[in-house]
Image 1 (tube, one colour):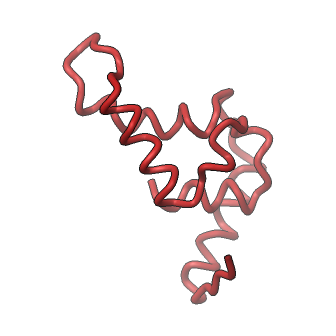
Image 2 (tube, rainbow, N blue to C red):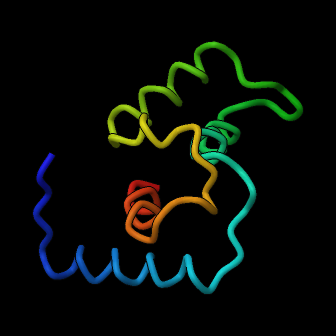
Amino acid sequence: MVMTFDRGRQSTLMFLAAMKETLPIPQMSVRTLVSHGRYSRLPFSKALGSGDRDAIERALDLTDMTELAGCMLSKLSGGQFGELSLPW
């Protein structure tokens, strides 16, 4: 896939890539990070269900992050980290 960036998006990506180098990165996978977006929809102390897992997979697919789903955040390149940060 070929992506084109306007100057604002390019600046944001550069900023996020630089932040990866200066901020502590949680020890979790891309999929785990995406799953955190589901917890606001759950009652207190309820586990993720099959519908939540389906939504997580859809989100990864829609944002072209499926290939990175099992990768640890700390192992992503600055550009990959920036791309991951933008949709959220």
